[in-house]
Length: 465
Ligand code: MN
Ligand code: MN
Image 1 (cartoon, rainbow, N blue to C red):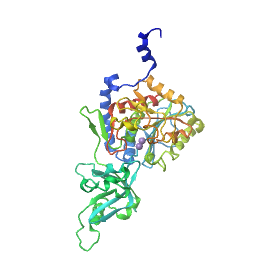
Image 2 (image 1 turned 90 degrees about the vertical axis):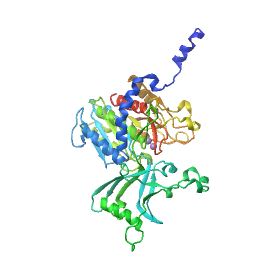
Image 3 (image 1 turned 45 degrees about the horizontal axis):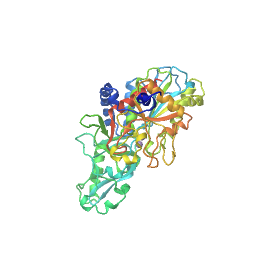
Image 4 (image 1 turned 90 degrees about the horizontal axis):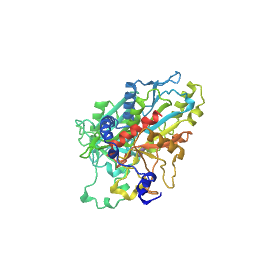
């Protein structure tokens, strides 16, 4: 610090900033574009947690994973899958270390905000047939009106047979929709608060409008829809009670922008982390630490339920692995490390008032590491340790992975959570790592291809640590 000239050098040495990936490595752009072709295909075929689970299992089986059997002994390099009720999945590759050294957990979620059909969904009102829905997760309800919607899910018939329903993705299929009010008559609606522009009980899906050809019957328009469903799926109204039918935006992932640098789609949160961690998991080849890649359900409603991360299915799996090697499961957990693989809100210049620019994540700057989430003074957060932040960021630096940090918006602007706290409560060091997303939780979320690729590289580095 002897003279003024060294100021620029000193600044370089002392300050820290993150640049656009394309300004740091042009080759990364090309690789990202290539990688994202596979992602777009996966995302377009994975419109529900069940479809995502099925596609993950199919890819796993094609890559040598066999069904996990707690009575069997597995050796380094062996690959297993655990299917939790067709709605969440664990994949693991046995490592060369003994399990008491801990495992590498990457936990993403494959459920997304959507509209679920109610148990008694079908009705008719003024000769229009409808499904009643109950929205799932954090949705801005107005975004779902007046746009094409598809229906996916399962119905378990009274005879036990499981019927899959998928309508609205094939261009030849019909689609469904919610109606909205015309601007001409929206004087009162315009005074509603944003959350009530479309109210919960107004989320009624149009399904039919022709009466069944029999003047004797009442509710003949509803009967038309029931008759068509019976013809195609052999299901009756009674059987909707044993069903999980989800209404989601119709159509697949699309490139966005003249330069095709972005992907627009429903469901990036969090299938983008599921896919990137899946690609890193299937490549893992006898890693030092056993890899445990979790694709969880129910994150968008708080991770409760038997297929969510509040359930002990992950812990039970780890206990069984420990028993296989006669090691203490508590030691396995104590020495394990976890990346909670979930998206964060990218800085949106149009809505910058809610963002804190120094601590937001930005598209095209790489995978985002989020030390804490939560709301109202870090309420309900994992907030990882300085030591684990250092471990993860140093690991990514050593592997040349493009990364940045992020916080979910300004202090007291709102907030959110991930599965991080459910893994860390098992005594496992955990931090949130994922892709920055614009328009998160909307029917058309945006991610940058370079960030998707950087996130894959981050999981690859972690699983091969
Ligand atoms: Mn998420
Ligand atoms: Mn979410």
